[in-house]
Length: 379
Length: 175
Image 1 (tube, one colour):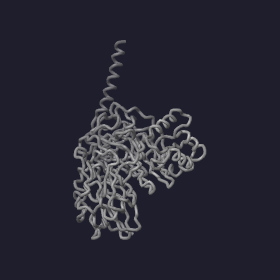
Image 2: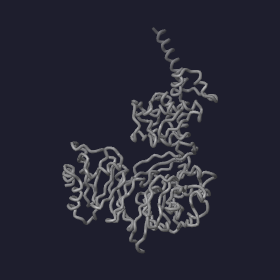
Image 3: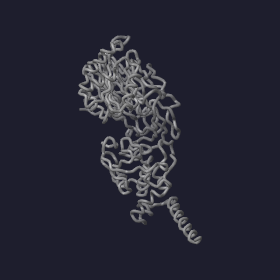
Image 4: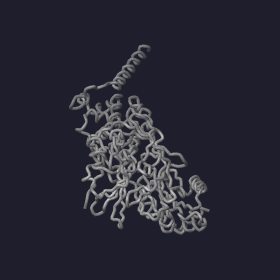
């Protein structure tokens, strides 16, 4: 049993001689104190509110830390270690092995609490033990999970708040014109504070070697102002107004190839895709949406479905399950915890697979009337 | 006939003037133990005075940000981790006494108690402003500007939402 903090002196963060971050920016003594204004680290946030991943071979546990407080970054000059970054810790002792601050002096409440998916990738230099981290700041990070080196960091959504990650220093280059300032409205901040992707977990398929990322396409205007710390209340000092990002919908699912560093395909959705994704050995990907369940009697909703299906540029099939409780979908519906959620299935087979075959695979996983309905709609 | 009209006009003018006076009244020193005004009025008058008073509503709006109400309920009361307060759904009641109690004593699952931490007068100003978020306070006194940029229709332009009771749920911002 051990306990480690995200801010404060090294003895509380469990940082010792075996702490070897890859980049100089993350090295130093008591950075959890010295990168803050006096005593601000005590109310500085950096909670562990997201996912934890474990590599049994390396004996390391990986997790991201949340944003520094308050949101108004002018009240906390400095890097604000060890917030908005990824920790690798020894599972037995809890001592930090490496840390990488994803968003130093986090300006946009991006945090780094999104999931860390541990996969071994065939990269140009050979097989690497990697950690895939689709961050809220809009970049898909591929780490060497032994050392914390960033092998690549590629935007998977529209990003206006930064101009790339320097792989030699590990620094994220913020765009100066988008930094929130007190009493000034900064417009066109992309992604929004909800992130290019939030807590909804991605799914990795070892068969297709693709990461299926459910995420949102939102931007925002923001104004920050002085705020006071009051125990038991949010410590923010920011007003934000979110709006749809450029493109056809406010949400999408991206099938990301981390080796080629590009999207294999995307599906646009009207609403942010707040559900997690599930990839199966049968090459299906499940996710939920916030659409209301369509009324089968309504020609309006039906034509809308068909129109959307027709507009899809993907060669893969796509089924809309509108019938009563299809057997294969129960888990996903429950997992999304969104009432009256519409469920879509999508074949994850490669684009060369014949469409007919892909469709029959989808149909097999549905039952009875629902299957017939789905098949009819796909025809 | 003319005399009747004249006296009727005088009555109307006086009524408007009195109402306008109440809207524009400013209490600069409510005293350390709470509002002087509060002590001098009956319960019902005290409650309704604040939401008929432009200064009380405007101050409530400012306190809404200062005391971090906006962190949970959002800048314009649209709701986030806390329930929306610009809609018609009310878990703990929408009358002035119930809203005052919610702010003063707190509610389960996250609403802190502000009684004893801020002046009594400010509790009433916040109460009045919360009612104006869904158009329950008179529109002529409700704020129509923001210190920061607008994220919603101004309170003074908000149509009254027909309040109705609601159960705590994820949909109302409480689990």
